[in-house]
Amino acid sequence: MLSKVARVGCLILALLGSVLGTFADDLADFNAAVEAASAHNRVAIGYLRTGNADLASREIDRLRDAWARFTERFSGERPGAFADNALYGKLFTVVSARLVGADLMLKTGRLDAASNSLNDIRGDLYNLRKASGVAVLADCVRDANSTMDTLMVYNDRALDWDKPEIRSGVATKASSYGAELDRCDGMASEAVRTAPEFRRLIDGAKASLALIPKAIAARDTDLLHRVLIELRSFDNLLAFRYG
Image 1 (tube, one colour):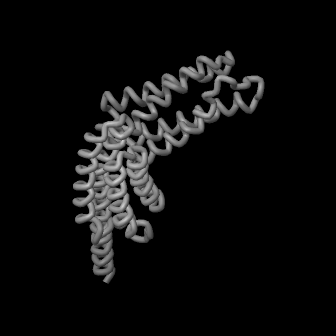
Image 2: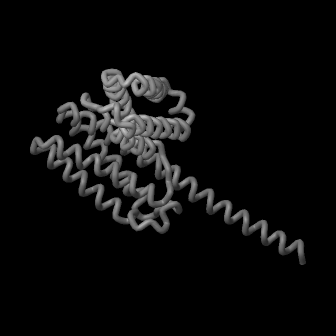
Image 3: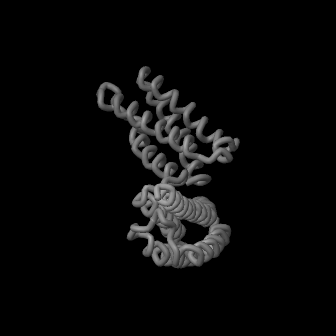
């Protein structure tokens, strides 16, 4: 009798493992399909930033094709990780509408508005994953971008170093940004983590961050300004390539 119960228990565990494995595979496929579309989105945003409407239009077309393939695969069958996520069902219509809006803005010469629509798509995907506790490198980069925004507040030639809250604020925000870089470095795949481009951006940003304590100690506004400009450059490139 005990042997029979044990066999049934093993069967249940095997079936559960199979189901969980399927969910994991579905999520990996989902993330890969999102990244395939997001790569075109990032490039399109980059072209819009530099005013190249023709190349941006080409990338938006590629983004639309990638999103159509993604929709066909995942709109009817969501990965288990998003089973109870109310944002999932809305994602497909919202993103499709944003793509239409981006195309319209581009055709009427409103490049900033087109870029905003594409950035909103990144936000939609970020919010979806965050609500389900799904973490990917692109979201970590987005968090790092937000932290960098708070550090850039101190890019002020009239900075009053005599105020202790200024010195502690710069140090705290710099530390927070460094922590975000470490997190992104840790969650990147082995292929990405060892890629020369990724290493140049992460290691370059960390090297710049290492100069901030020196700027604080010397109350050197010019040095802080140079470091923050360097960091923003690394930060923008991280967003363009991996965000």
